[in-house]
Length: 108
Image (cartoon, rainbow, N blue to C red; front, top):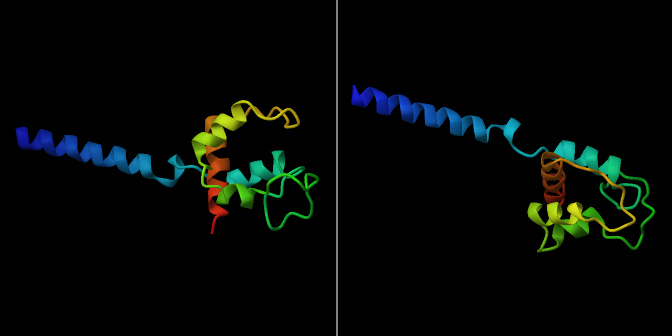
């Protein structure tokens, strides 16, 4: 009986790990781009298909993606206390992760 219990437990662990690593559980770069276009594109260049941005002196998302200090944690910290000109976006942790994932894709 012990072998059967071990098999069930290890099988259950594999199912849980597979579920957690499934695409539905990871940050979504496409949603991050949509958020960037909705909240950030007025001032920042966030996409190469964007026609304009008013903040010419502000870093583009491409510049941010190349910054060695950029990561999801840094973005969460920044968005928790943004500069005064930024709108109050009240993004969820998942939306911040999506935004960070999108910015991360711009490195390439």
